[in-house]
Figure: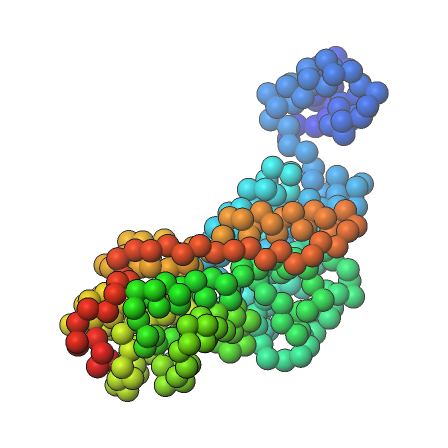
Length: 342
């Protein structure tokens, strides 16, 4: 391992001078800094981050808790956070909650034991008014930014989120503009504020169009492809007369599409279909999916901006970003009599 005194011997300066160069001390000339740093890089010197952390009372570490690495929406948010962290000289420790409150609590405590300088957390949503780990975080004062909407148990934290009401409203308006009046909705988990906002956007668009919301057209679907498949089977069995389907996310929409196509139905001839999220597979699905493009990279960048403000001693407001409608081949005007019977 290359030490400071090795670099000093090679450079013909004192070990203290090399130490000051590594700390960017102002009393060392620019020319000496350039020469010593170039030599350190050439010799393969790696600073002792633990020792630096003890001196500076920082670890240059961020903790990042997500639902799962397989979540296609989270991936680009993580990418944006990690890229900015790298530019700032920070490393990111990634942990998965797997949407389990007990695991979420365990991984947050592990990250706190590593003395991370800040935490980014995608909350595990529950209907409880409080959650012990979030109360603990608030008491410790660790800078924390939520990646998603706040709920009662985490209402005191800084967060970044998508304006899901406006985005879902736009998706429903798109279907209404095509001429659909019987639009089925595949809803997400009741505990997730984003799911409730998307359902509200759907309801609001119908009301503003003068169409009464029919609860027979709303199906609980959860958030996965498998749950989308189950909801689509229920829709087909109940035949509520829908000509279009709007889903809480792209995975649910794709699950529904698998069932519809498997039953010999055509998208969008028999049923139009709209998702939410614009995950990679939505564009490359058998029928490219009309959806809402969530601002994933912008959410990650906004989260880092909020984190830096928190670490600097100021509390930023909630950042609520807009999503955009992406129109592809899965939505079209209702054209066949067959669609009116579904």
